[in-house]
Length: 74
Image (cartoon, rainbow, N blue to C red; front, side, top):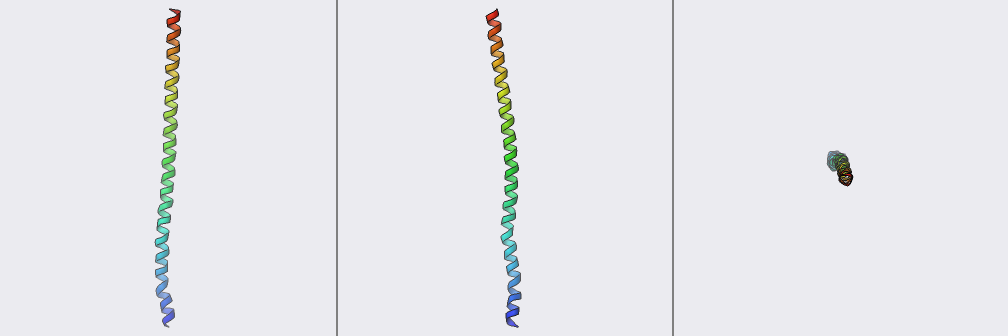
């Protein structure tokens, strides 16, 4: 009688511990997902910035080349 009662008493405790141990895992998964999303956003921002910089540099180079051509022609 007592031993079965003891097992019944320990069972909820075990389930509680299991639930408590799964909470950090779920939080970690959520944080990992958020981290991945943030990485994607950062990558997109970096790509956009790099593209803008490349375009600006290209425009400046073309403008300088055009200016030198115009100056040399004149």
